[in-house]
Image (cartoon, rainbow over all chains, first blue to last red; front, side):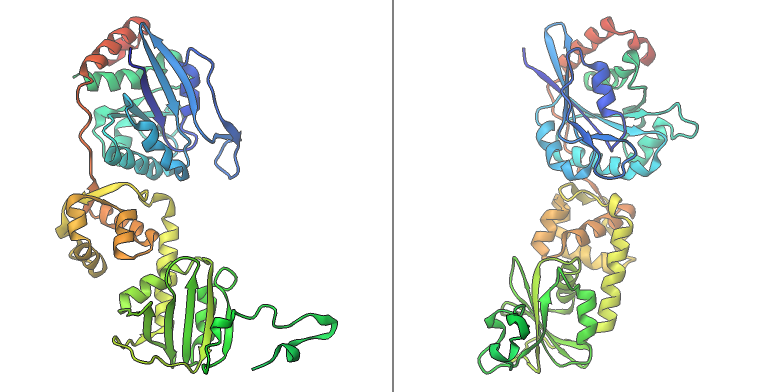
Amino acid sequence: MEPLKLIVTGPVGAGKSTLIRTLSETEVVDTDALASEAIGKATTTVALDHGTLQLDGHLLHIFGTPGQDRFDFMWEILAEGALGVLLLVRADRPETLPAARNILDFVVSRTQVPHVVGVTHLDRPQVWQPEEVALFLGTPPERAVGFDPRDREEAVKPLVRLLELMGA
Amino acid sequence: MPTAQHGRQAGGRSQWRDRPPREHFPPGGNAVAIFGNLKDISLLDLLPLLSGQQGKLSLRPKRGAELLLFLNNSRITCAKKGEAALPPHRVEEELFGLLDRPEAEFAFHIGDRPDRCLGRLDLRLEELLLKLSTLRDEIQSVAGALPLPDTVFAFADPGRAEGDPELRDFVRLAWSQLERGTSARELAGLLGMPLDRVRYLFYKLRALGVIQPLAQSPRLGRRGIARQLLGLLKRRFRTWSWSH
């Protein structure tokens, strides 16, 4: 059966590596390295993360991209033939929204791959709601989903929404 | 002109070891008084030094043609790239591209005048420097929000650019490309403009609703697999109840 590919992207610190570690049923290959600049966390993905999810006969490969936009050349290559793109955004860090919008604009204008926006860190005291994030990004509100990438039942929500929109 | 012998100092070290290449001393031409590399001395430091002097400033980027600026009385009176005389807006674009300390040799030839100049200019150096440094500061202030170089944009409502002369002129210049969809990188190459300047103009045009990302149509033919996977996920996870 055709191998399937899901791309997880978004600004630094949005929860991409966490989501892949939570969803993957095989050991995650990651390429974390000490951050060379102040990005709010000690390590960051420098190439890509990879995990898999087996759904009966279908093997879903999940790839996570680095968050820094200097790696944008990878996004188009990775998205080629992908089932969909999950763009993750932190609800409590509005300063990352312009970078998220740039990524989404790139994906929308350069690929034919459908997308969903996953909004993380909604448990923080002051947050943007998913529909507000969607408004900023210029994407329909039904494409934005709030979820917790640390919890397995929650982590599947953006994927479910993506498939619902694709299957409608 | 000093000779190598004159330039020899005690200890055998030449004070002229950093002098510019021989081609900066054209036969019968005037000596180079000020020379160096923009990676060491920025354009914003160099141009004020030359204010009030008359001569030719040669700027040789590592890649691309040499830029010649003829200065007189604190003004740029003629500018050439290769054999072509540059209009004022092209001079601004060229200098803006040299602001961020690229590798580019420079040499100022005192007293040199253009043999002939088809497009006489009258650009005041001080005003030009102020304009360029302001623009650079503006771009740096929104650097993180600038559209990515390869994102494709197209017109949403071109009429909205009419209120701003700079944006209006840019839109007219890029009209055919923005009608079909273009990226900042493509446009910068076509118009000979610095990439960051085009990204900044795209940023402003997008904020005004003049342009928007050109959305590709999602690939068709995956509805079946999407429904199949959704069914499998619903059986595996309880989450399906959340979305209904």
